[in-house]
Amino acid sequence: MDIQRIARQHPRLLEKILAKSTGAIGEVLVADRLDELGYKVEPTNNNARQCDLMACSPGGASFSIEVKTDRQKRPTWFVRTRPDEEASEFWVFISAPRKPTELPDPIAVEMYVLSVEEVQELWDASDWNKRNPTNGDIRRWQIPDDALNSWTKLPK
Image (cartoon, rainbow, N blue to C red; front, side):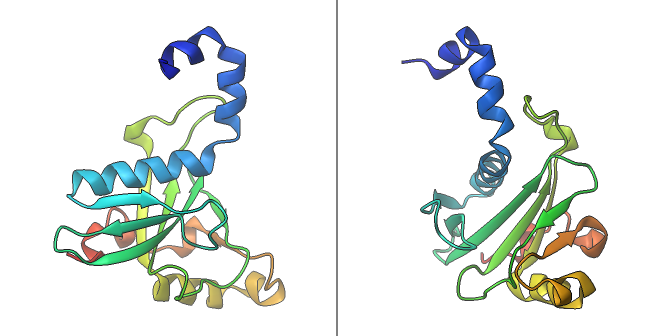
């Protein structure tokens, strides 16, 4: 079965799938980048709270990653509750500009890599999150520019 051929034969269904796949697209982008860097990556159960991927470094260190993806250039990522260090050790925030029914242009994708402690600091500093502790968010302007492609934070 060739999924690409089937998708081309049913473009309306493909558009529907893509429109609801922003999170999965982000997870694939992160897994692909980590694979390029020599990491082994496995998805977790879709119901795992704040933990989308499990990774193993080239040196054998295992760690968990939460991925947040948005289709906008200057996104707001929904982080409903304070990041939990027991759920994930790293977070990757992705800006993947695209039309709802298309894939993002890889050149336009930006990935910001932060430790869970850094994300907790951002979340805690937000007045919105203080007033809405179960409906929080993190906005692009809150994330330091030097977090862009900062894969060196990850275990070796």
